[in-house]
Structure formats: C-alpha cells, structure tokens
Amino acid sequence: MSAAVLPQTQRSTVPPMNRPLIAAFILGVLATACQGTSVTSPSSMEEVTAQPSAASQTESTPPSPSESLTQTVSARPSPSQTVSASPSPSAAPEPGLAIFASAVNGLRLRAGPSLTAHALEYRCTGNFVEVPADCSEAIVIDAGRTMVVFDGPVAADGFDWYLVVLTGREPGADQLGWAATPQDGDAWLVPSRYECPASAPDVNVIVAMGGAAAVHCYQGRELTLEGWVATGFGCNQMGTFEPTWLAHPCANMSYIRSTPPPPMGDQPLFLHYPAPGVINPTLTYDDTQRVWIVGHYDDPVATECVIEPADPPREDGRMFVASDLAADVAECRMRFVVTEVTALP
Image: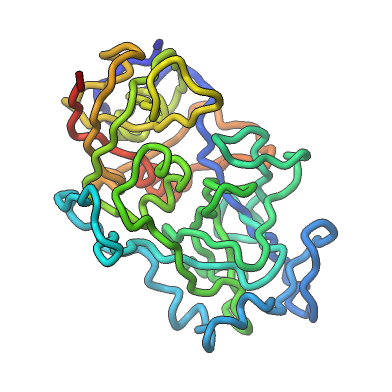
C-alpha cells in the first residue's frame, strides 16, 4: 500500500488523489413549487410541490419545522460504553442524531443551505450502493426515504435547511448534503425512525448500514470488530486537512474484511482510521492476518476537522466545490476511529 501514516499538522499538504466524495445531497426546491397541489414523479418533476404525500399523513399531527426539527445534534457521549456481544433487544444502543423522512416526492439535495447552491447528482460508482444508469441526473428523494441529520436548521430563502445523509443502500445513499423544508406551510421533512441492530454489529452489518446510520446508532460508543486485514490500497490528495490523521481521506486509512483471503466475490471492505499512536493494520500486516479493532464513531476531534482540497473537483454536481465547515465536521464524525488493534492467531 502506498499510503503512509502522516503526522498531524496544522496545515498539511499531501500528494493529489481522487478524494472520496464529501458529497452533498441536494434538495430541489423552487419557490414557484409552493403553489403545487399534487405530488409529481421524480422522472418528470422539475419543481418540488408542497403537497404532503400519504407517507406524511401517517404521522400524528406532524410538527412544524420551527417547533420540533430544531434540536438535531445531540451531545457526544464519551466512547467508554461498550456494546455487549449479545445484548437483548432492550439493550440496543440509544439513537443519537435525529432521523427525518421526506413527506413529498421529488426533494433534492444541495451543496449548501441555499437555493443558489448547486444540486448534486448521483455518483457513477458506489460502495455496494445502487448506481443509476444515468448518473448525471440530480439526486431525487421521494416520500418515505429516511435520512440522518447532522446539522441545522439554517434559515435561508424562506426555508429551514438541514445537513443530512440518506440511509439505506438505494441510489444517493451515503452522500452528504442540505435538504430544505418550508418555514411556513406543510413540512417537507418530518420526524421518523431508523431501526438500529439489537446486537453488536459485525463488519458486514456496519458496511451495510453506512457511516451516517452507524453514527446514529452507536454515537461515541466503543465497538469491537473482527476481520482480516486488506492491503494494496493507496491514494493521494493535496490540500489542507486538519487534523491530518482524521480529516485527510486516505493519509491514515486502513481496511479489514469479514473473510480471509482470497476474497469471496465482491466483498465489502470496512474503512477505519487509527488514532495517533495506534498501529495501522493495513500498513503493519499482510492479508493473512486476522485482527480485532476497537474503536468508535463520532470522535470528539471531529469538531476540529477542516477539509479543503487544493484542487476542488469540477462543478459537476457530485461534490462540494467550496469549503463547508459543517460538512467537514459531519464527514469526520462518520469515520470509525480505532483506539486498539489486536493481532489474532
């Protein structure tokens, strides 16, 4: 593997790479749409109507955004609580971040909390996430689709904007962006739920959940994951990344998988970031080594993250093209920080 563990610096520069998408979901909300009287399908929809779908009617008296969608980010617990290997359903982790669901068809995500921010498009590749045949289309969020809320509300253009990541493995999953709900009238985003695993997760479960859902379910809690080291990865990216070990997408990355080599088919890999002073399994062992890694999501250091690529990607609708500190922090909160590595026989 060509990546190297880099020392933490205040302004770190690392050689260029294809930066993992600090992607932003986009909510297409045009002011004229507020007069709509029906929900249109995403295939033909250019505007978002304000008419709630049947999904929102299942909520009992959906609260207005100003009343109950304001407290979205809970305080971080200390990563000292350990999830039992086989807890009862009642012992499942308490959820952390808020979960919203779209109450209308055709919502979109934007690269910032404003109607002027560009709308993001589907990624053309994904880590076990379905990719549309035409990945140049804007991301569309239909009624009932759930999302994890990382920040907000931010008031702009007559809307309350929330920084969210869609859950599930459907198109658009795991991309970060701003979604809006009207400040007046029917809410486009309503409180919802995400069913967290009742027992301690393994590598495959965590990968299937995605980083946003994992933060929601295991916010700051200590997890132990077992797997085989995966090697042969490398990437480069020039820019400002603070702190380097966590903010840089590949400077200290490491991978494990759930089965020994040779890999069995298209097997998911679990990406993690060893904390300073902790060995990096991918740089230390070969593919035959089985390890335990102990760590947590939502590390407190994430609040200090700054992610500014030196060469921003072209404005093709798939990435943030300008620094968004709230998005930088959210990106780092979704990274699994490893505090202990044990080589197994």
